Amino acid sequence: MENIIKIYVDNDIYLSEFMEQDQDELVLLLNEKEFSENTGTIPFPYELVHSKNLLLYAFAEAKKFKKIIHFAIRNQEGKIIGSIGFEKLYKLPTHQAEIGYWLSKKYWGQGIMPKVIQKVCEYGFSELSLARISAMVFIFNIPSCKVLEKSGFIKEGVLRNFFLQNGNIFDGVIYSKIKHS
Ligand SMILES: CC(C)(COP(=O)(O)OP(=O)(O)OC[C@H]1O[C@@H](n2cnc3c(N)ncnc32)[C@H](O)[C@@H]1OP(=O)(O)O)[C@@H](O)C(=O)NCCC(=O)NCCS
Image (cartoon, rainbow, N blue to C red; front, side):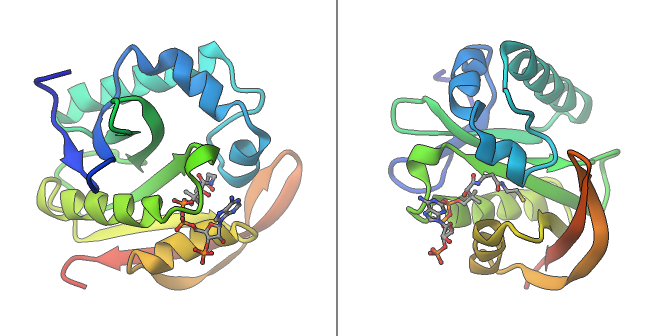
């Protein structure tokens, strides 16, 4: 725990890499319908096999790119309370990437994620040399749209019938932030 990279978001919250010990906590946090309903990547029910695969994926990406690509969001005790990462990053160096994120329900509504996104954007622009960071949101996910707007992202448009989830097709909203904006 002592030698890991910590990016402080405020006095209480920091970002670091994922760890094996997060496996069980991830199941406890993510086994809630709201996560699968609002993201394309989190299944419900959320089981141990899913958290194992998530950790394997995060470790493999870190190894491949020799950088942290997926961050755990941690509280003062070092316990995982959410995550944020760069998705669909096929190569580095590159000029653009997409972010995905979630936060434990217990912490919603405290303005944590806008601060997290700003830190991760700073990291993306400086450490990964990105020029553009985007986010794709389900049309009905108003909290996520608000979070992105609070983080300085600009809505670029609505992608019609972009998502297919559980047999339902619906629109997506694309947001982006560019370096120095
Ligand atoms: C989207 C999410 C990350 C927001 O994080 P957060 O730290 O709570 O963000 P904020 O505190 O800035 O709140 C953002 C909005 O969430 C909504 N919100 C706040 N508390 C809430 C609660 N208890 N229940 C539901 N929504 C709530 C409000 O609309 C709020 O906007 P406001 O500040 O203008 O009132 C979080 O809701 C989440 O993890 N959602 C599920 C996963 C997800 O949607 N990921 C993004 C996929 S694109």
